[in-house]
Image (cartoon, rainbow, N blue to C red; front, side, top):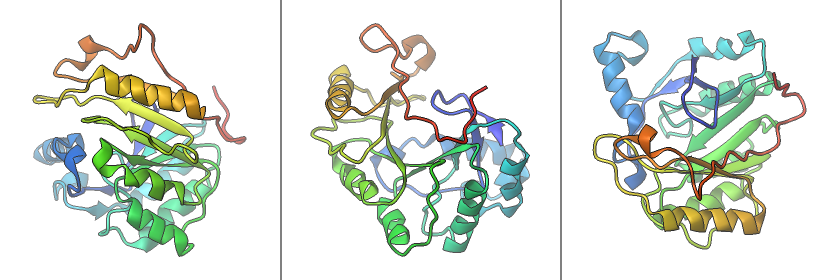
Length: 244
């Protein structure tokens, strides 16, 4: 567990590390770069670099957090990577089910496998588990509809890095949308018109909209204001979550 600088969460918890690329949103994966850096530093958890690995020893961590937390699960991986055994995914869900005072946010690009497991009844969806998918442009928009079919109580989209327009999205079963530009050494540009269009779609569908950043080589300088203000809307917290 570690504190996070990601604007829409508080902590990151990584019972799985490592991943493989599946679409253009993965091109400059920050987690891959970070894993290589941590391996070079001799961090035991990343001794195999960015290969998919499960870490059963991390499953006890959420039980030790006394205050309610908003937690990004597997910032360094994808819980629904095909190399992650379903039994381990179920172990992760059991931990989340047994810690209702925390909100757990999961992101996947592999919505087909998520839906397959969900349809088979492998997961227990409690209201503190927020299930999301990353959608970088219209080429992968089908992830939205696949996510919508799952039994997750709260479903969200991370449109980051937004590298193209996302038009005419079906937001009828979506509870939250995050948008952000790509950062790093060679970021692909994000056009303001793409962001504004997504924000307008959210307004029409009455879906909370969160603008994370413009990105770019100097993301701090570029900031996170859209139309001269910040947008930090979020879904309602579950009943057992106690804000401090």
